[in-house]
Each structure stands twice: as C-alpha cells, then as structure tokens.
Amino acid sequence: MVRCALTGTPGTGKTSISKLLNKKIIHLSDYYERSSDGKSDSGEWLIELDLLNDIIQKLDTEDAVFEGHVSHFLNNMDLIIILRCDPKVLKKRLEKRDYSKDKIRENLEAEAMNIIYSEAKDNIGEERIFELDTTKNLIENNANILEKFMNGNIKLEETFDYSERIMDWY
Image (cartoon, rainbow, N blue to C red; front, side, top):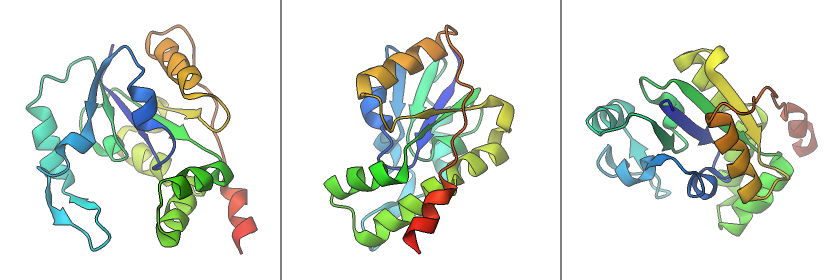
C-alpha cells in the first residue's frame, strides 16, 4: 500500500468510510489542536498546514490512509482520493449535523466548484487524484469500493461535475 490522502468536503463520508477500511488510518482531526493556534469565532480549528505536516512526518505513517478534509495538503502523498457528493444530498447531511446556513452554503459551493480537486491538483498533480461519489451508495459499499481500489483490484476513473447545481441557488 501507499500513503493515501482521503479527503472531501465535510459530509461526504470520510470518517465513516475510513472506519470500515482494513488499513492503517490516521485521522487528522486527532492532530488539529496541536497544529493550530486556536479556533475561529465559529468554533473551527485554524490549522497551520506546515505545523500539521511536521507533526505527521514524525509519525510512523508508511502504508497509511490520512483521513481529513485537509489531507490533500499533506506532503509526500502517493495518491489522493476525493469523496464527492451531490450538493442536494450533501445539504441534507450537513443539516443533520446542525451546520449553520452560511457553513452549509460554503461547503455546497466548495463541492459544486470542485475546490478540493483544484487544491489537490496544485499539490500532487491530477494523475494521482481519484474520485468516488458517495451520493447513492451505502457507507459499507463505498468502503468496499475503496478497499478494492487501494488493493489494486479495480480502477476509479470517473470524475464528477456538480457545477450546474449552483444555478439552482440563484
């Protein structure tokens, strides 16, 4: 196995799916406090990516999956898997988490505009980025797909474009 970043907009299934993988999982949220100067007014960790990278580099992280919405910014990743979700479904997931309307809108726009893909491409290059849409599959099915992909048994070759969803909002 390789060093793999499992990333995606909040609500796409990163944590739930990673818990079902038969892999060494590094949950980046366990390191947010140590890699931050504090929280924003809305209660989010203000993560210093350089400090997070320094902390992660000191861990035994060979053959690991790095789960978190900033994992695509980590250094030395062999591949990045971006979990995607139709913004219409993502909205419902975020509402169940009691996200504020502004935070929901921010995340829906990020998903529709494929912001994480753009950031990942700047960090690693598009040939090592793969996407999995979690909109319709059960968590267990998505974990099974990722397990097969990481073991080299299947390919993830689809890309997803939800940019047209923005037109529904204005």
